[in-house]
Length: 246
Image 1: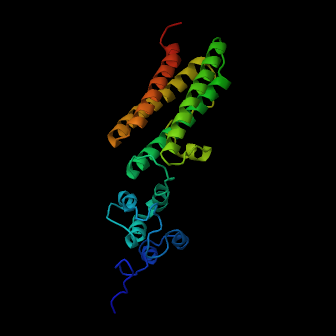
Image 2: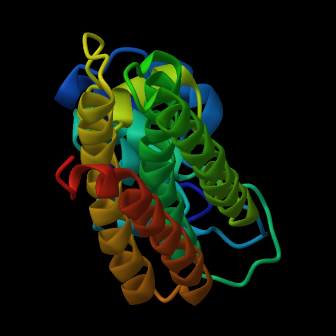
Image 3: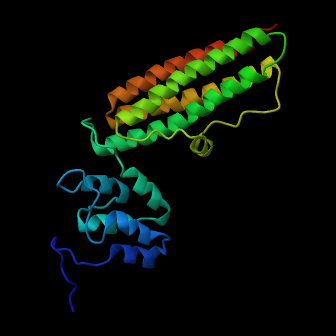
């Protein structure tokens, strides 16, 4: 007996059941509440936003195909795919795929920036030695400046319809900075450690500028360029303490 056709002309198969059989995915039944069966419910207009799904599945999909296309993807990308589709409605006219790419990019930079700010505070609190006062104040100023970068990055994420991921759990998982040493105390050691972190962050920031430019988001590229200049200035202020013989 041929499969029964739905209103869209697509066979009324159960994509969630197919996914469960193919990948043995846990919790797929719960996801059915979100997607329904045989229809796309992730739409912000009367027309199915299938372009949102194409970038996730690398295959054309709309209406009844959306759920099957999404759930037949790699099991390790299931939750990430669900998160990627959630854009807060906005009249910002950047294309959805562009905004999603930039939001992911900025959230990576946000995790690094929050980690960097905490590392500057760690240096501020724990530095010791003959140059204590100067370095104590410098590290505090660095943390304050980085805090401004954090706000700018997070606010840009929200402007694009995303969610700024700034909890300590997320930062601990996603930061690309090396862990800050908890056993150092001298000014030279803290200057070296913080300089390394600033240099790493500066490098990822320059890469992010290129990515934003290629994605067609000139505003984000400009924002990141401003942050990059500020980070380079902080790096100069900190590492200069290592560049002269005492």
